[in-house]
Length: 593
Image (cartoon, rainbow, N blue to C red; front, top):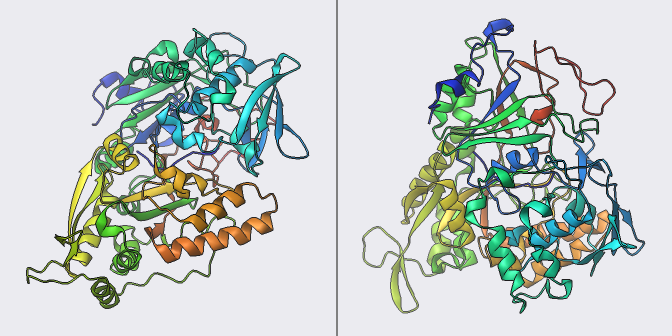
């Protein structure tokens, strides 16, 4: 499933919750005293702030909310192919402008209400409402949808009508960009019925119902209201304790339990917030949590399978890219020559060796080496302080007052080269990298301060362009990426993902052409040119791509890893000794380990 993005992560306070997390219970036990309690506790490094799609942008929430809400189609994780779920695969017109879905008559919400085309219509209108700033990111993916209609008035058959074709439209419409919400829960006043399609793409619709619907949908009081947590998914909302955990319980009446790739064996899945990485590893060793999916490299290599034989470690390379993002709206970073000079002041080999403990590979461009269209011809970005100093001098940066800090007159004012690395709290890797890079830049006459904020503040500052520079981890598709959502100039406003304000007309044209090109070989040519443009402009400094570093308590069977993030599907896991067995013949069954 797409998005799904990217990023990503207080010890237990309640004794009873500790016991549910893997300590001894009254049931039979596995080797090493492992619990057979049919649950899993998943570590996250930052508290989830919102799980209602499409308002939530937390990386951890993107693993949580699919437990409740589902897309029209599921995904065969091995083949990376869409398969039927809430609806059939689409019937696609010859001109690629009409996609028709037939609703599965068995699909229903957890309150027993059948899923229909009205829910499809509502869910997409929520995302496409131009007054809903929080959905700007997703809206960019569905902006070619002109309208949705019921085929011959049948609300069990919906047709999407496009203004222009898009090569990944089946993935966008059915694969997880837009999860299906219950209209009867979120829109009991039928406001979306009064939002006409001919105003949907007007940035400032005159009809006041657009603003009313946006305000009602994002009402903060609904974010944690159990009455809103009604979905078609395999799990039900459990409880949510701020800065501690959020839990989900298996829906015994789940309609899709016999659908391929929709199996759910665990009775409960919890997401446990532990902001300190060392404390998280301690909790894993104590069997108080079951799973860590992005263990800091230093801690990962220190995990000892001899001392802790009940812990398994796995690495899986996926579409993950870590880079420095320079805010081009800041005067310091407007010059391409400056951005290249700063990039030459970053020793990526040291970062990979020391910070990532060798568990990463340096990267040079915006598309990862795991992806189609990756351009391997881009030359490595060298660590060359002398070249960097020369380029800065050519751009007018000198130490005019002898204080050891470069300066330049910008808009008539003497400006020292000082900036702040704004990083998110809870990531030791990001902090270490920022400190190493800051020291390398200090030697070149650039003063860098490192400042950390909690995740929700950090992501809001990034989306609002209220930062100087930062280090971010960008996550993408397991299959083919569409860079439009983070690189097109239209996404540099309204809290879109182009947080570095990259504006390039040629790149825009390429990204637009790429979306309407169905020949993969022609897309390859377009994407190679796009990578060259980004490389030349250097709006970001690529650092490394690291694999998922997964550490887990070895009490589960039916475990399988995929290149699709988060790299596994937890509901498929079966607690060893629980008495449960994988259903024979279903697509996701794997040999017992």
